Image 1 (spheres, rainbow, N blue to C red):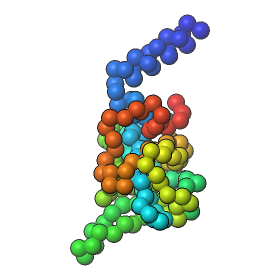
Image 2 (image 1 turned 90 degrees about the vertical axis):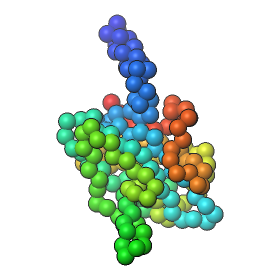
Image 3 (image 1 turned 30 degrees about the vertical axis):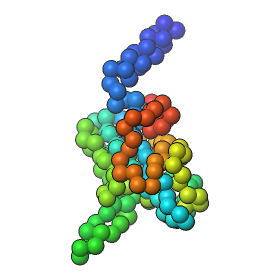
Image 4 (image 1 turned 90 degrees about the horizontal axis):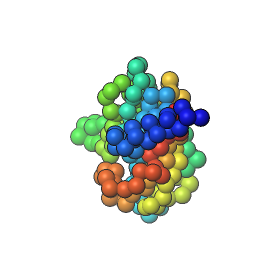
Length: 167
């Protein structure tokens, strides 16, 4: 029992010493930090989520999918410039190398929700499951920000969001 209590105290102290750990929890070496989305405007049937993926493991992992009950389809997308026109395209996966954060952000890689069942409303906290080749399924909760948001809110309570489940 004493060893158990010491381990809980050690984890607590590690979080205090390293504020970035408060943004997410590890799941088989994968940490999801600051997951967020924009509120959808009007009758929009599509939305996107963004986050930073950090691999604390020894080997490269790969994000190969996303699951959600929020939309008819949930896919991994990127933006590409083709003949001077910005277009979105589905990608088969995203490599997440050890020690190098992989950023999903507006204008770049993102999780795309197509055929939304309900609009994303500012202030909501919504579920998403990321699927990795090695780490498996990583449940995440993302916070919906305003329609014009361009980055995750910096001054907010991390205790209820951005946490993947697992050890």
